[in-house]
Image 1 (cartoon, one colour):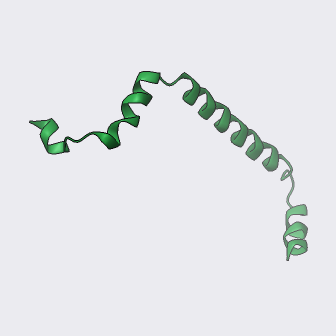
Image 2 (cartoon, one colour):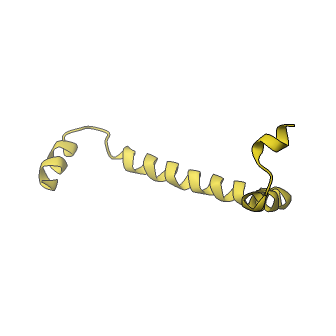
Length: 63
C-alpha cells in the first residue's frame, strides 16, 4: 500500500517542502506552548487548582 502512495507522491513537483513545513509548525507550536506555560502566573495556577475544592455552587457566586 505504501509503495502506491509513494509513487503518487513522487510525481508531484515541490512536495518535498511539506514535511519541512509540518515539522516547523510542530516545533513552533510546542515552543510557544512551553513559553506560555512557563510564563503563566503562579497565582492563577494556584487559583485554578483550588477550583475543584470550592464548595460554593455557581449560582451562589452570581448573587
